[in-house]
Length: 301
Ligand code: NAP
Image (cartoon, rainbow, N blue to C red; front, side):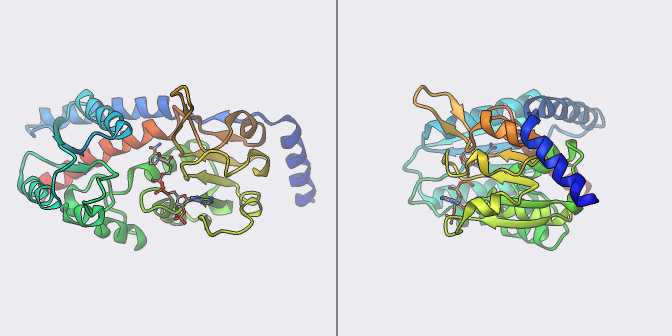
C-alpha cells in the first residue's frame, strides 16, 4: 500500500512539481542579524570584538570578489576585520611566517587564507600552519579529523551552511539517500561527513564515477559541487528531491549560473537552491558564525 502511495506521489510530483526555493540569501541575512546581536552582547560584557584576518595572495578576479564580500560581512556584524592583501609573487615562507604571527596575535580569533593560492605555494602546508583554534574555514586536518570522529569543532563553512538550509526544509535525514557530485576537500568530502553525522545514507560521485545518471536518480538529497554546468542533467533528478546547487559559474555576459539548469530542475525537485542567492550567502554566514564560535572558545580557555 505504502509503495503504491509513494508511486502515486512520485507521479503527481513529476507532473505538477514546481520546487519551493531555498532562499539562502534571506536565511543568511537572518543569521547575520543574530550574529550581530550576539557580538554586541560579547562587547557589552567587556570582551573585544571578534577579529578575523582574511589573507588574499594575488589578484584572481573571483577571489577578490569573495574576499571583499567576506570582509564587508565581517564589518557589518561588528567584527574587527583585518585585510591582508599580498602580491602574487609572495613566497610560501613569507606566508607561513605571517600565519605564525597571526596565530600568536591575541586580537585575531580567525584566520582565513583565500583559496586557490598561486601554484608555487602549497595550500595544504598553509592550511596546516593555521592553529586549529583559529581555523574558521574548518579545513585544518585537526578540524576535519574531529568531523570524521563525530565530534565536530570548527566545521567547513559551505557544508555547514548547506546542512542549515536542508534543516529548514524539514527533511527526514534518517530516511534520505543523499548523492553528492564532486569530492573536493572543501565541499564534497566534508559534505559527506556532515550528512553522515546527521544519519543520512550517502554516496559521493566524482570524475571516475560511471553512470552518473543512475546515481543522481536515486537521490532524495542531491548536492552538486563540480564547477561545470551541464554535467548533471535536470531530467535525471528524482521527482521530489531536495537539490542543492553549489556550483558558481559565469555566463559570457558575466552573470552567474550554477551547475544545474535551474528552470528544468525546478520542475523535478521539491526544494531547490538558486544561484546566486542559495549556498553562497550561507557560506559567508557560517564563516562569521565560526569566527564568533572561535572567539567564544578562545576567551573561555
Ligand atoms: P573542485 O575542487 O574543482 O572540485 C570539483 C569536483 O568535481 C572534484 O571532486 C571533481 O572530481 C568533480 N568532477 C569534475 N568533473 C566531474 C565529472 N565529469 N563528473 C563528476 N564529478 C566531476 O571544486 P570545488 O572547490 O569543490 O567547487 C565546486 C564548485 O562549487 C565551483 O563552481 C566553486 O566555485 C563552487 N563553490 C561555491 C561555494 C559557495 O559558497 N557557493 C563554495 C565553494 C565552492 P575529482 O575529485 O575526481 O577530481
